[in-house]
Structures are given as C-alpha cells and as structure tokens.
Image 1 (cartoon, helix red, strand yellow):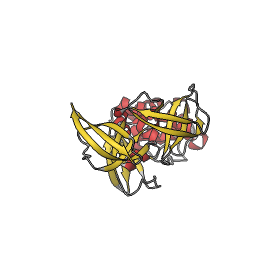
Image 2 (tube, helix red, strand yellow; image 1 turned 135 degrees about the horizontal axis):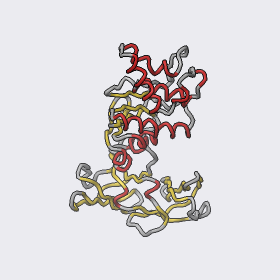
Image 3 (tube, one colour; image 1 turned 30 degrees about the horizontal axis):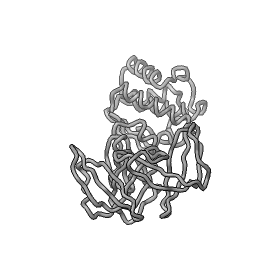
Image 4 (cartoon, one colour; image 1 turned 45 degrees about the vertical axis):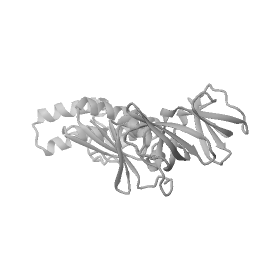
Length: 298
C-alpha cells in the first residue's frame, strides 16, 4: 500500500526504507540488495539511496513509498490518494511514473483519487463511488463520453444539460436515434446505444461536453445563445453562454479561435453522436468531500 502522507521511517535511509519489507520477509541479503536496487531504478532514485526522508522533496518521498510497496512484488498495489499533497506539475509527472512502474511490473493497481482528470489519464477502468455506492464502472473514454447518471456526468468533467422530453425513437444498426424536444420547443437528435431505455414521452436531460460543441449552425443540434464570459487557459478558451430560457452552457474552443464579444448572440451546435440522455434525478448533485473515484490499472 502507498499512503497519501508517505509514511516513511524517518530514521532509515532511502535504501533501508525500500528494503524494510524484504527484511521482514527474511529474504537472503543478496536478494534484498538486488531487489532494492531494481526498485530504486524503477522510480529513478538510485542517486538518493543514502539520503534520509527529511533530505527529500515531497515527490521524491512519494517515489520512495512507491518503491517500498512494489519491491515485495505484490499482486495488488493499493494507492490511497498518493499525489494529493503535491503540486500540479509534480502530480502530472508522477502519474506517468506510477503508470510506467505498474505497466513494467505487470501488477493490478487500485488508485483512489478525487482528481477526475487524474483518474481518466492513468487508468484502464474507473469506478465512481458516492456514499459508498458504486455508480458506474467503465473504461475512461466510455465513462466520460457515456455517463449513466447526472451525478457521474457532473462529477467527471463538466456537462452542458438541457431539460428535454423524448418525442420519437427508432433503431439504426446497433444504436437508437432519439428525437427530443426542449422546454422552449427546440428539437434535437441523439444517437445512443441499445442499453439506454428512454421511451417516448420520457422527461430527461440531454447532455454534451464543452469540447463537443462549436460555434455555428452546421451540425444538426443547435441553439441560440448569448456570450456571457470567456476564460483563457493556455491551450483553449472556455466560453460561457446562456440561452433565452436561462440555461447556461460552456463551449471549449482552441486558443487560436476568434471569440465574439460579450453580449453577442451566437449559435452553438453539436453532433447527435456526441451527446447523451440522462435520467431526470431529483437534483444535479455537486461533488462532496466523501465522493471518490477509484481507478484500476491492469
């Protein structure tokens, strides 16, 4: 297990910390030395082997904790929010390192995190839990593109939502084509897989991600909005818009895109296969401190 707060032995060197589990298992000294060196090489800490924890940075201490956990060659590696105490850039670097170690050793890892982007980027499968209940288990791409509930859609990334009613549906190969109408009368088309069961007359939500939307009217689904604000984040703009019915939307466009002025009226559009339908729950829950994402790496 790798803990959030490292849990290293302060009076032992890096080498002694990593070798501890092997000594408890009473492995031969030659085997302990060999495995310890291998583990330190995996986490790129060979040159720090004689230092004590107080002489290391937070990222280095977490890598020692990882080496100590994998050196005993476990079948399952448990990581309890191991990167929560680190800054963003270091977290991103260690995400890659943990994934690389897990892949090289070929072990299953269960990684608990509140960081949704972290869960999506490092895992083979993601489990979203709320109040101890599993809401969805899926591959990262399916979880993001086809959430099964309002909660998952809002907890994992941002989702634009419209209140709609299903007015027609029909099969097309392995999917259904669903026509829906919003409260202000606009009609939309949704392509969904056969697992979804939204009968004609069902009131539900239509959801689509900010990056699935674009400005213009060339795609089948479109609504007229007014630009309220725009936020620049380096590689993209996130533009906040509102419809005449008071619904708020976010559109993510490349950083080199031309953004209309605040107050401008503009259409946003999205494709039928880039949106999804979600059951109408009592309310769209916000994430709470106890909500977690588990990731499984195999």
